Length: 271
Image (cartoon, rainbow, N blue to C red; front, side, top):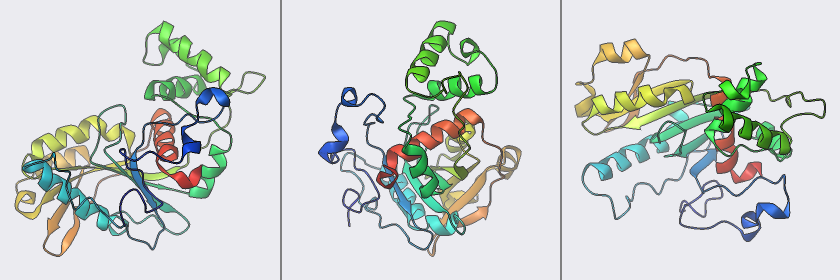
């Protein structure tokens, strides 16, 4: 089984069905076809079939080893981050969060709820739109949403035109659909860089963890892990497993919105 025929994941080099490539102009409120994401969703009792164990030919040296390290984590994703009864685990690889591309982004959610939300045909095009929407929902003007005032107002107008607000101007109710999430950075030797990347991107997930080989695991600064609440996953001969589990933190409304968008883009079963 390959990444583009398993029914759960997209391959950036293989276009999807033609119906998913229709111009947005044909139906104004239809979710636009985003750039394909490398992702899949797993039922609670099903482990992924991973083709990532065969690294791309343009990767050499450490990138190859990090690809294999990531593949090992994907194979045991349900054991590392069990979704729980009634939920499913989504695996997104190297997706743009708005603050980098983590090697892995594991997301626990309900596909049924995601599908129901997607029927509303609402979408977010960028992380900036998520910030503006979250700001307006909190009573903060769009012009103060972390973007320039002009850009914020332009985004707000676009969101209004796409149906994010009711006729009387109230925001469409959108409860969080992400139950839990974990970003993972894989490093063969440079664990310091991995911690820096986690610190930069962790606001887009509830938890964050570093993934390293067993030989590197003993060198990772435990104080740095504890100070930031990061977890540590180590690959041994028997497979990958936790050495330290990460602390959970709340997810900001903007991050929840954008993470939800990424899930909807990557999982064909929610369409």
